[in-house]
Amino acid sequence: MRGLYAIVDVSVLQAKGLDPVEFARAALAVRPAALQLRAKDLGARESLALLRALAPVCRGVGVPLVANDRPDLAVLAGCDMVHLGQDDVPPELARRIAPRLGIGISTHTPEQLARALDARPTYVAYGPIFSTTSKVNAAPVVGLAGLREAARAAERAGIPLVAIGGIDLARVADVGRIVPCAAVISGLVSDVVDIAGVAERARAFAAALRSSAPAVEAHA
Picture: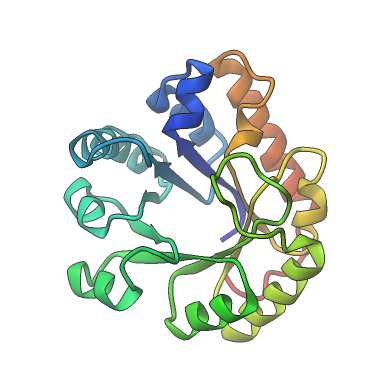
């Protein structure tokens, strides 16, 4: 995975008065590595409806759609992947529910990362790299040094690593020099007042990651 991993966080967007589907369209204009719906405060029916609205938009530009937490909703909506946290269903169960569904796993410590890599997911996310306000009770910051160690472990396993947590435009190049893919939530909407601003911010993130990423990616 390479480039921007855009996260549609419904709660964050509601606070900014931005429509999730229009936000997604703006982010998809830069053909991100993936687009994830994060809807922690929505019920299953509302989340499913939103995933179904996003699915054809993502398919239209060839970008994988990722459902957060719920492999069942991912299957029903026709998503490409599900992203699992440490307290969600284990990847083994997700594979039984949906054998063809790609799986991403959130990790926050070297031990969690090692277990996740042993499960052979589609990708592993690691963080928070920096302090973040997008998640309540966030895990301790791992920093760039922690990310560098995680990147080495993921490279040995041959599994893509996605950096996440507090990544803004001022720091994304530092992240991009270690791993070629970064997940962004608040960074796409901070100081942004409209959808045009989101599109501009997405282009800036994509350009920064493209220019700072290592010339050769060890794992595609």
